[in-house]
Length: 459
Image 1 (cartoon, rainbow, N blue to C red):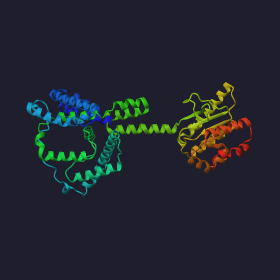
Image 2 (image 1 turned 90 degrees about the vertical axis):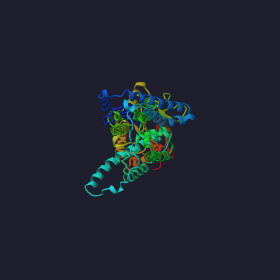
Image 3 (image 1 turned 135 degrees about the horizontal axis):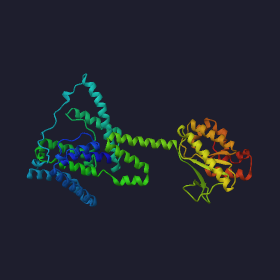
Image 4 (image 1 turned 180 degrees about the vertical axis):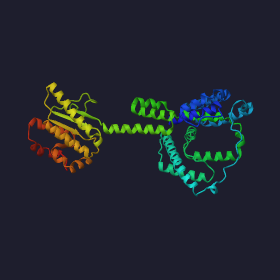
């Protein structure tokens, strides 16, 4: 939204500087080139007038924000600016000194155009091609703008209803000489900053425009274009949320990178490019999370049966002879190889640590599958390979709290029978208890199966 607001502000430089010719591109490079290659055409009168009204609009908005009971001052500021600007131009004849005005407006409403519709080739084919492209762009812009503003007021946007509304609006509009339209960003921002709350504001606005076209167009002859530009810029400035960007930087650097990438893409190219960049980076992040899930060692919090990440809780204690690992993501083909290598590395590091410290040798590896919501065949094969690797080292694999979906697939693949139902537990605490029991009693596995049947899963 900040990028689109910046683009709209840059486009208003034409009105602020009183330029007759301006680029149709929206990127900042083209706009700046168009501005600075026409320095000889800048109208200082227009610039001064625009800065004054922009300052007035910003001050009224700031005052209403500090004193909420005077909200009407900010709401009336745009209309007041138009009236004062028109009176000033009329009294000083500023239109003769470089200040552009609206000029003569054609009075009346658009004529009906339903009789002008041509539904035969080759016009029909051209209309379909153009309609599909413009329709997709209009819908994307309208829904994106609607969702952006919905975040400010905390309401829900239904994409289907938005599409139906925009479609019906353009169907009816095509019968009354209207051009293709959508939920425009600049007008939505002006509406938002004026304090409008519901869709009734659009009805009031439509009636006001209709009355203006029918009866009041001569009054707008002397309205300076620079005032309209100042109104749009003041509305756009309120949509550039610096605090949100700073908050993203403090909370999540990657989210800040996505935000700034989208902003740079919009400002230096177009809204479409900015959205594509943001979506691409977000998808890359998702793929990285899936392909490189977090795995960490769990330790026991003293005087409890609770087990947590040893890096997060530094007061945790290692369980002698037992390595507890947690996998923090579903296991798919994209991350199965990485997880197999990571688990093997954890085991190597634990064995090296035990050798250097002289503690009890490693006997059991517990995999906490609480966060594993799903698993595919590659993941099942990975667990089977990890089991074989662990057993070749003389260790035993134990599973803790696998979900229902995981259990179904492990059961169908017959991996449960290979691991043994007696080595699958509801909690990490129960799994550690069983391992400690075996370490201290040195009972054969068959004895453990009988004594811990109440704690195992029923498959």
